[in-house]
Length: 127
Image (cartoon, rainbow, N blue to C red; front, side):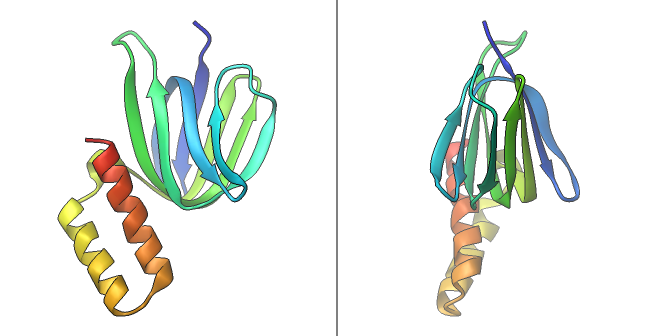
């Protein structure tokens, strides 16, 4: 089976690395799916969940992360997601994200509302 080597890196750490059969991310041009053999790509990431369909010795699975800004690059079977901020779904405190969303709405802070919404969507998709 053809695979991608995926690296998800935030400004402060490596978030996830491994093999995958497919990755779906949101760019400023819309959602994009990357599979082995995709044309070379360089695009700007928009805030949104990133879904990685993993492969490996333990079988297939799914990794979901909340990503806020950055770049996505694919060439020669290697996919790099270089994010300003990224969190795996299982790292997200749902109660805290819900409170942040309520506070952002109360303060009419569209940017904070978008970040909290992305975190909640990633957290619920990853469970």
